[in-house]
Image 1 (cartoon, rainbow, N blue to C red):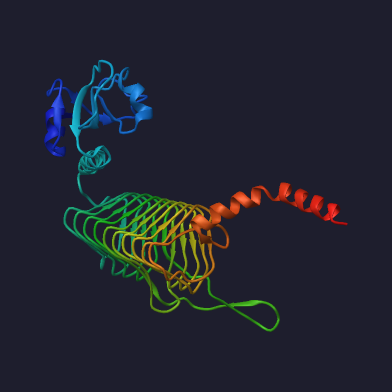
Image 2 (cartoon, rainbow, N blue to C red; image 1 turned 45 degrees about the horizontal axis):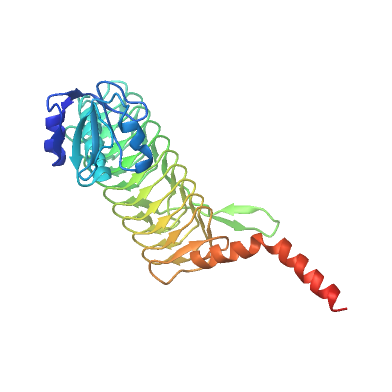
Length: 342
């Protein structure tokens, strides 16, 4: 894709300083950018690179005042991060649109499966009986879509995605490589001899519109009813969501989060990497957890920030940790006091 500074400025509502006709064809980090690249900076620690970068275009804040000459054409915007997200989305859409929509002759599509207009299905992908794929979807090679699965318009499934039977994926979703939707929940009943009997998992998974799943994410089907990921949730790589969990709208989870069965995560929550949530509990709207926190009980207060295992109030944890680091010295002082009082 090629685009001029003037076109970028029009797209972002920005102002050009320099050559409006300069052309770029890819985004690049400011430290590594060269001619034909565009870069950005919005943090003072990267300002040094602005004066020696070879990038053709540099995206900067509207109030940035250079301390030294800059050779790049500047595009000034009010919100650098927001403008960058919009611009990168433009590039990503252009790259996806470059492929001609088609169902590969090497794909296996059941006669009863339906593929909507403008959708493409890559080589060695399999669409089972009763599958419905909406319009303008992109199904990359080696995707498996099981019986009666429904995929909404504009959804993208990257290579190796596996979607088990009866699952529902909404509109404008993105599912990255090797994610699994609808595998069995972890349901087993103990037997008198100490062994375990599998409990059939007969529910499904429902993923609403505009959800993104990172690579290797696993969303288990419900034992009964549905495991539900509500609209706009963003789930990172290697996250596991167990059976009958409900994830609220616009909640985000960083890598390696694990949610145990039947828990309910409220809307607009933010779970740091490797957070663990016990089963059958609820997190209130806006709950935030620091990385590696363990949530063992229901959180009822909205907007609560938590840290630690088991997790406690964030500020209380930080204060407690300061004391914890001082425990050897405190213990030494206690021993000295005890000795002095004998």
